[in-house]
Image 1 (tube, rainbow, N blue to C red):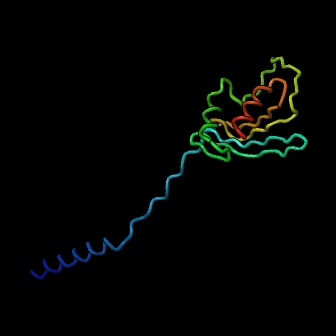
Image 2 (image 1 turned 30 degrees about the horizontal axis):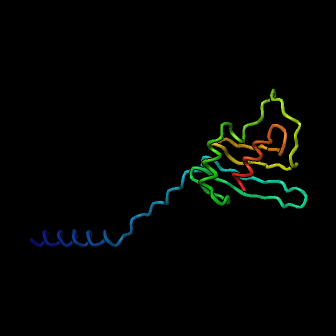
Image 3 (image 1 turned 135 degrees about the vertical axis):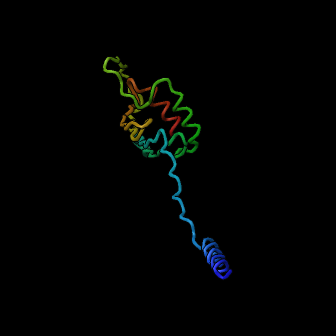
Length: 134
């Protein structure tokens, strides 16, 4: 009987000690990287300061005032705004304001760097980006 009591006491002490040891805490899960993560810089025209900012999509974020709306507009575009122009494209010689926007970052996992001019083949794209990113 003494052995039984000693064994029961040992089990009770062991069980009590289980509650005092803290379990290891798992590291918080890292959020998945954004599918689109762009930095942009609009060059200023004479008398106008340049604009710098960022936009992340999926999930939406960055310095753009309404990132979710900007992402929807950017991702709905027929042609990727970061795709290089085809070498066979014939461009008009129209230079509207002389500005440009430089896009750098990641577009669906690929590193991008694209300069969009306010004129020529980029005239329409520059206008769209101006509305979306500013």
